Image 1 (cartoon, one colour):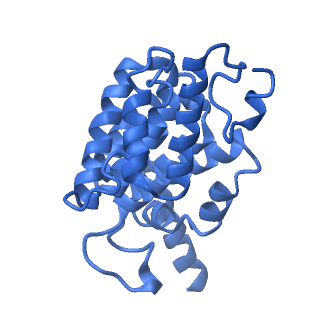
Image 2: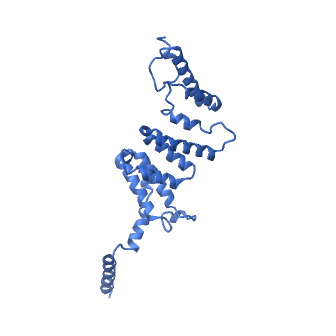
Image 3: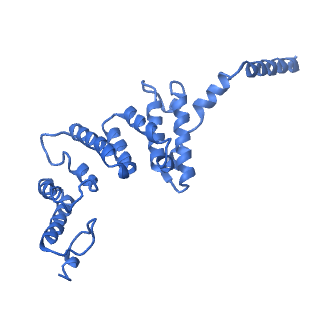
Length: 235
């Protein structure tokens, strides 16, 4: 049995050397599962997973990523939209039943919601968790929030490239997007995604509104006095 462990193709969550024939068979079946996934042999992968998930030695909740991957794959009767819907429902249940993995599950759930076109629900999920620890210190979640906010800020009608950040954009959402991306960069200065989108995100909308709609009567008065002063100088 001492050389058995070295012949396994993939390392499982339990890296201990199997001590009996049953555990050896489970490790072999895990190898088959991973090999089938690599080869996109979804039918055999699902069969292997169905057996593994019933083994008391296997904590299938820890392997939730495998469940998400296999949901809907290889089934000609299920389209991508249906498969993503199944994954969203599964992940929503896992969020409640597996709290120690909630941070990782949240990232996957947000991605699946985006793929399903449910951007507002994705933002609602992030708004629910981001204010609290440990989610507030996760740069990936802040990048997701920033990009979703930017997506939702777009006007409904098509606009030209020259006015892409101009009239029609939701200034509040653009400001939120910038705040999330800057927060992600502050947490992780090497985050190239946050840097890339911040470099392309001008302050055009908010700065334009600041110039055209002062926040107080005092600011309007200051602008009026400045204009009058300039007129007097010209005369």
